[in-house]
Image (cartoon, rainbow, N blue to C red; front, side):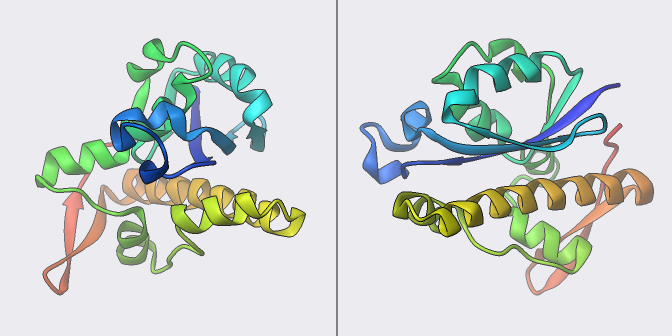
Length: 179
C-alpha cells in the first residue's frame, strides 16, 4: 500500500479568524511537509496547495496526526479533500478512540521515542509571520520534524505493536495495529 505522511503549518491562529476552530479553512497554509518512500521529504507552500491535494489523491493512505480535524481542513480551502478522509490514518483519532481522550504528539513522542519537538504551532505561526528567511526556514524544519516523529512513531507501533503515552505520572502502553 502506497502511503504518504503529511503535516501542515498555518499563517493564522484560531483566535484570528471568524469562527475560530470551526473555521480551520481560514487559517491559511504557510507550509506542508510530506514524506513518501519514492520522493522522501518534500515541502509545499500555499501556491502549491492544489498540487499537494492532487498528489495526496495518488496515495492509498495518508498518515497524519490530527489530519482529519486539522491538516485536511487547512487544505480544504484550496481544493476538494473529501475523498482523502477515507484514505486517512489519523494517529490522534485512532488513539483517542482507544483511550477516550486526546494525546499530544509531543507527549506521544517523548514517551514512545524518548524525544520531544522543537517548538509549537504557535511558534510556527509567529516565525512565519516574521517574514525573515531564517525563521521561515525554521517553520519548514519544525514541520519536517513533526513528519519525521510521526514516521518514527508509526514505525515503532508497527514493529513493536504498541506506543506509549504519559498518563497520571507514568507511561501507559497502548497496543496498536497500524497496518
